[in-house]
Image 1 (cartoon, rainbow, N blue to C red):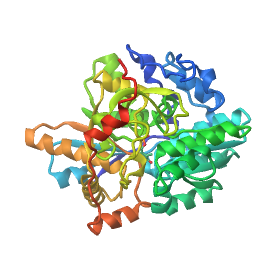
Image 2: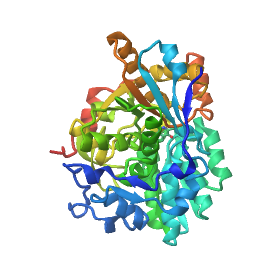
Image 3: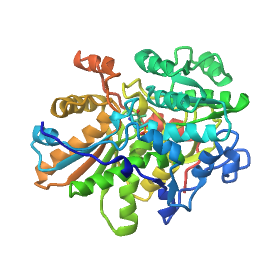
Image 4: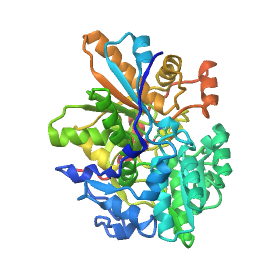
Length: 453
Ligand SMILES: *Cc1c(COP(=O)(O)O)cnc(C)c1O
């Protein structure tokens, strides 16, 4: 193995998050309030989110937003995270490419999600909120928010996508250990859940449905706010601590990435590692390529339409200008539960529209092949989600060998897979299948939506 680690000091934890929107010449299209058909304002979001999260969501002017000291204090539990030169993987692939990864799996909950859970819980607490509600797919976001809410003395209710609730029981136990209440979604406890169960009794749930349920609970419960683990601008903003640290660590290694890769669910870990480097493309003429690795079973950036769509299944959220497969798209039950979301956030969608970021889709078996190769070469068992980034990295490294180039590749290891071993069991038993999406399904799910011009 002999992989090399680059470590920072606690004092190197960033003091501000990077807001890329402030540096974009052409800003993302505004999010639309469906009731008024007007661009959404921060005030429109106050009933749902903490006021500071709502203000950050709408901030298009400040490139740097100060990280509150209590949040930085919590970051100290596991940040700064290591950057690793993956020499073991380079050898296994016999590639001339230099491969680095940022290891976000070292957080107490095993993924990058805690980077945003902590500030979101903090802003709720600061404002006197007592209850928080959210949804979770694979359970990573729920686990992160459960810990963050516990730390600030808030009560949390989590709607967990039913397929994951059954496939990943230990994530449920983790949330319950931190004191959160966990409900399988769709549930009979909300109008949105009851409607879906009535229409489709065997429905295994989706993030879109779980969001509808959580939003409904937040809107109908006094002193309760909703928190989202991906997709929105303020979530991506908080995740930029990943790329800001990685920038310093790449400098320690005397390197700069030609390619930056991350897996893509709603886009938060991708944005987190990409935007601090993308700022040098926007401002300083750097030429780094950015590749979002999404599952072939849920290919919003590679095959979705650029439309105004709802963030949730029931249509409670504002209309977001997003690359989307349609809010009622029901993805196959792949094991990368955290990547089963129908759309991409407005900022990354606009960046994609401008050709500033690329995307590839990865089939389930290719992702697990990559995961096992990586585990053997580097010792870390990756989350099924992160394995999509590893697979995309391996494609680039093999291409470098074929073309005799030696690019520097940086990918984000968004989480470890130690709580996903049931998925590995299925893979090792030869029990996993690939899924593709019919073009007709995408057309049917998006045809009634307005195209973004
Ligand atoms: C949630 C999750 C993802 C996908 O979410 P993004 O917002 O796209 O980053 C990826 N990897 C892990 C480990 C996750 O928990």
